[in-house]
Image (cartoon, rainbow, N blue to C red; front, side, top):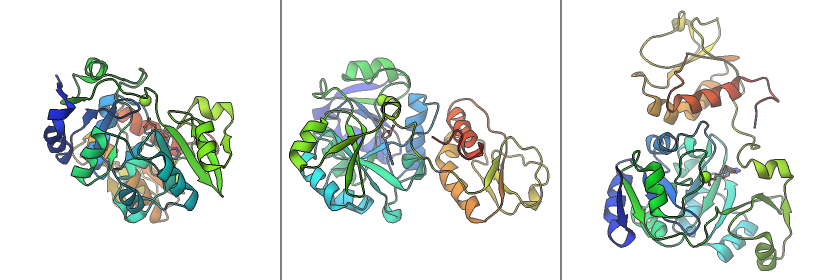
Length: 322
Ligand code: AMP
Ligand code: MG
């Protein structure tokens, strides 16, 4: 069971766990977050594993300073003004990712943009000490409501994680507002802790709401990364000219003929496979094969999310491409 520790005493423990690639539940001003080192793929995979998320949607990366944000993303002048006004606070900005940033592709679900936020309080101090950004979705099992107290986190995730940092009830109690600047216009991707009216009053730029469908399903309407190559799933035998995305110790028939091969996890470990998924798809795509053939991947644990992502990559363009 997770240890629940008051924030005033938990900093060193949280640091040690995060540095070791473990996940930690911690308070932010919005809701409790389930945090992992955003530069460590296995740590990010553990977040999805602990939440039992059936799909890889992009996560928010949390920073402790504007300088850290600038190392990670290109910040346009309007986004910079928003950050200046509302950080630290419950506002998340979607920004173009710097490739040099070292953010693990599982954080962004392979996208070339990243959602960034600077939280207040314990989380900020922790990130500063760690010197690396933390990926952190809400600290609850997938499909349950976000936790706003340490007790709620412990009840929901206590058997899956080692430490819950108790910072008392979270003051805002709802998720952050997500904004994206596009061609000098402000698009609201998700309503949250800062209202559109507050943003408009502070910045003098209109906030454009998306249609209802998009707001109902944050993360679902994103144009996710999809390889240029076609994707063929569950292959037991390779066709000429295909690249191979392998899994586990045994190869599909004809694997020697593959244009290129990447094994998500030679030992058949789903956490390792999740961490490798986006970068290996991109690597194979770069070889220019018409088709990426994918060996069967079990559906248990993180396998569900891995198979979900691959199914979307394999769907005819225009379908399943949220
Ligand atoms: P949470 O589960 O609270 O961490 O919220 C994550 C949400 O942030 C996702 O469901 C998306 O709606 C949004 N998000 C994260 N990254 C991006 C991105 N690169 N582009 C657009 N939206 C994003
Ligand atoms: Mg949530």
